Image (cartoon, rainbow, N blue to C red):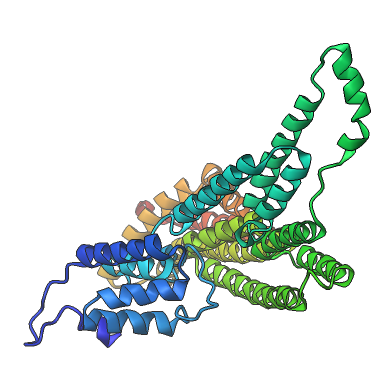
Length: 455
């Protein structure tokens, strides 16, 4: 990333300010102009337009950044939130992030407005031709065949449906005018001409096959977008049947391309699933480190992918990955609780042991008849303080300690029998040691009462 560090240096080596908002604005305007002129762009074309508008140093950095991640490939699949996720480069911030966003995703609404205008223009043109040539059902049939046979019409299922609805309305109007009530002479003439009016409106075979082909291609596109392999293979099978029934109207290349796209989608879906597994492992590792923020963020992303693309991440697999992450989080929480529990037990044990050592040491000095007044005086002072502390460690103190340890046990996930047994054993040991200390204090008190002067 040395290129990134040198972006703000001029030819003399001094730091030069880069106006990132201006660069981002220029790039977005260039992309928008190209979209308005040629329609929707591919991702690699968008990146080329952005690179052409940048200074040499920044363009070199951006090209290296995109190439290192494989985003310049024509078949690259880039998650929509990759630039806002924790896995993005830490040095990608501010204007750099927005510049990369324009180079990768283009401008908002890219291609959609021009497509809609083009579709509306063709629709109005075809409708005008039908209205101009329409006189009866037969002329409507010829005009409809020409309109629906237009290459841009049978290649666009939405436009095909719009024109088909318009033709159906015109057909209904003609039939309504043909059956208007009149006088008796009109009825006799109408009955005499009845056989001649029985010609039904029907599209030619080629247009019907092309309409069925367009419908299947549109359905295949929806399955490919959703990574639905079963639905896509069903559509490919129906395309093959259509090809076998009408080999003169459906080319083999069309079926082969659909089969190839289905196979490529299946490979991409498998790679996507592998990435999701790695993503879940990152969440488990974050949970084991105690990074609950990252772990929760990844779980939410997996849930969103499961909702939007259930064919990629089915419910069973999502719940399995989520349970693995939750288990890692529970293990970390259990470790923290056990650590806190052990630390509290060690602190109480050290405190009780200290009191016992002070009382026992003072008793030994008295029994041995120490001749060092300073040592005996210091020991007696420590003994008095210890005796006062032992008085505070009564049954109420012990009950508070038990409640405190029980609260820590409540935070444990999973089996708690072993931890509860350890806590019970610890409480019994503390109770036993306190009983021994009190007994030794009573012995010291008896000795002091029996000695001359009460000392």
